[in-house]
Image (cartoon, rainbow, N blue to C red; front, side, top):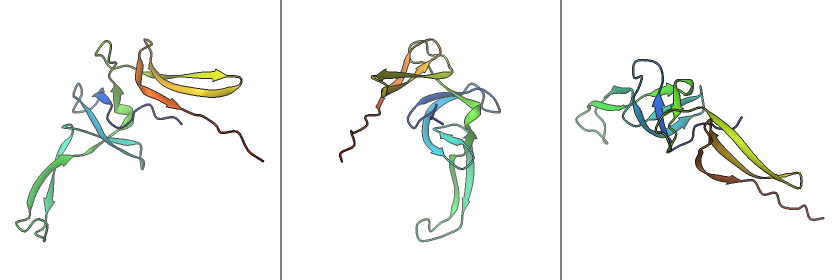
Length: 120
């Protein structure tokens, strides 16, 4: 299935403890369909003393949120929106595929699917 949310997208949390929070997607976690959002769902990780952290201690970092709890923000309206896909077909071949908000605003850049002709 095509990714409705991608790295570096601006998203808004729509449910849970952090509802209404906005941030940039730092990373997608494939196992379990989760995302890590900058500044949202901060937790403490306790570190044992090691060479990298000789003192040990507590480090605050972002925890993951399920992908169903976030929506991308429409750049035109500034509101969270659902995502659809628009494909451009030329002579029966898919030339371009775009993520589009429900209102019709293009999200992100165009992803080209150019297929090279098979040479025999």
